[in-house]
Image (cartoon, rainbow, N blue to C red; front, side, top):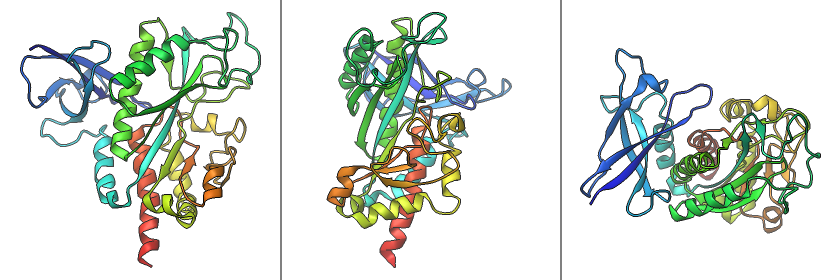
Length: 339
């Protein structure tokens, strides 16, 4: 039996990494083999020593090719099989393992914008659409642009077995969101990267690009974020742990440590306007979409649940944001339990 396996990896482009992929033909079953690639063409190596290794870490059915064909997400290794410097998954793994007993889980809300050339879908040639307001969760050809791509992407993610939990139109024309989770750290990040690959690949079929730019349109428009919802077993059982997690994220040095790694263009998006807190200030509170971290109203009412870190950009690396939040919050929760 011949199988087409699409090997997917994250490259070394700065300041925001890109997805790459290529097809390997497999003629027998069993373990997915390692493969290689030219790192000098992906900003991951010099030409005089360009060989790098693809290590399969997650696979799922390929909903584009169908049949028994596969999508294969890979870590990038050096030829001595150590993690490459661009391999952020390798940094998350020990943190996730260390705090696994706390049962951390995430739900990530991925916003993105469809572009036709340089313009968001729904932006007229040489002008601007009506102000934002009616587009969010809108219905009708005057409000919604790109729904056929969104629906096809959703169907493909579900067919691949990815943990999508919803979709919606966002506040700017051509801007959408899908949600992944709730899942453990490595799993939610793996699923997010494959869902992103499927988004780009699906939009490609319509002659459209899917941008994760944090501020895809200048002016009075919301930016694009990746609001990150987080909880541990203790947070799902009581409110004290909710407050502990919020205060840990706001402890000395932590806010800037996080936002500096929450995606390119953070200062342009986190301005204090358009449902954001200023990038250089930290706040938290119930039902507050102008806070850095929101405690949902039902969490405050039930005194248990999760928190939403509203700071990550749409272009954030999910391996990075999950590692930072787990390390910061779970370290403090562990310390409080031992006191």
